Length: 509
Image (tube, rainbow, N blue to C red):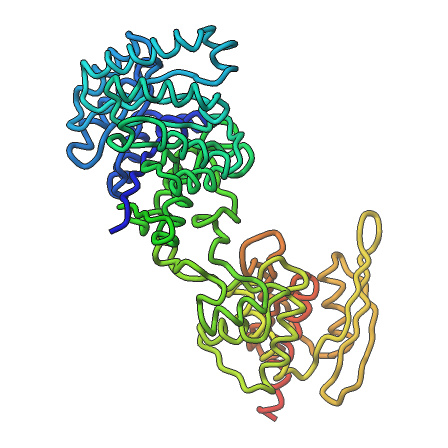
């Protein structure tokens, strides 16, 4: 059986320190319910002395959690902080006080203005004082990543001797390289008496983009608790992202001799919840929970994933609650991906039929970042209309603007293959185009309706035009056309209606 690695979530404390991420008590309770559902081991619910709101949040979350998980409150190594935290945690069945102080030369000299001896004395007093209120006390050695290792060993030893049940070794500034931080953890494991009887926790920051790597190296060297946040929220560049460390342990459990009890199927839901509440969006390429985490746009990748998912995905999207893999259709997509998506939409093609559809797809894809299902439907519909057409559009050019007179130059191809070009003026660009069409086609009709809608979302969406024309006998004919250029869409729609009118006249004759 592998070692259990406790997941200590600090989204509601350190994560909330991200600029703009502040949450009220009700919002914190919503997140806390999700954390409980995920089966995290510890919820750091806040810093009780910092504000009445934080005090209330810690108390309410303590009441909510019951026996499900430990509820933790942060303090400085100050008696009044500890007393207020104990009061807030009175509602919790499994309370923990998290107390400590800075231990690096910079913190001792510039912030706390303490000697090493004074710092050890304050740490011991804080742990003992907290033990008077709760059995579970976690000591944090702030900025341990930059501390002198002999002093770090000394102060951690003192905290363990004073009764700390958890010792937290933070890389507060995200300064360390993974192997250097791992060596610090290993030094503590080898030199602190009784450390095997306490939980060794790590709290790593992402200033150099290595928070997850630091945490993994710490686990490899003996740490048994990781402090993390959903989406990696936190001060400056953020904290270790829970979704990353949990899935890294799941993927490499045997190698790390480690496992967690987190329900990974809740990771995506939790990510979206926190993003919604804080208003801080997750970058699309964020590991595990980003919008593109299981999305494939390269034709080579799409072909591989469609043949066997694990050719390009090490994680099953369902394992993190992300649904399925996404095939993103773009100009880089190949035949296999496009055919697969059309089959999902209910379309089947022979090879000969598919090639012109693929060429039409590439024309659209070159104009858009992403091609959606509505675009695919429109491509097929436009191809079908063109195949049945008597007159088809070969080229159209518009000149208009203030104070110019709108002018259309139009070339149509007849069913005999001949090209005819006409020029016409109008009150607007569409009017000019339609008058040019009338000159070529020579069919009398009245335009009774003209409407435009976007086929899909986005400023680069295809536009679909619908027109209704009334023939000389009173019959109404509907025409549709679509393209990224609204003038082209308009022309195709009008031609589609006129082609139907002409075909109807021929049948009657």
